[in-house]
Image (tube, rainbow, N blue to C red; front, side, top):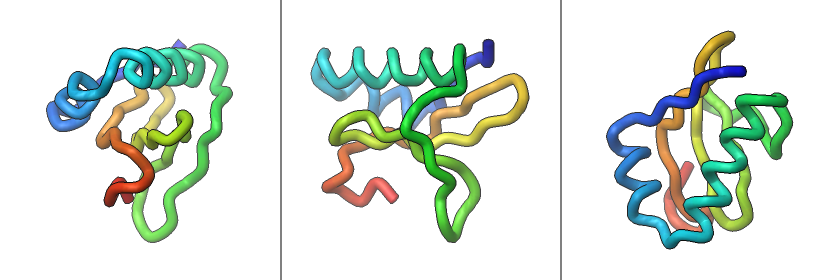
Length: 80
């Protein structure tokens, strides 16, 4: 299992979300850490990946041990 870490900005963005999307995002990150499964694609034009959870996107970097959530936001905003 990989460890999940949040940047300060990502932690604030996650805390600002309503309860249901916050729970869904956290569960999706846990599934990704445990199984490596999820709606993940590599980002174009920059390093990192995105995890799609409904209308929300989690931009993250991953290595062999850690998943670092960098930004969390709705797709309609300037998430990318």
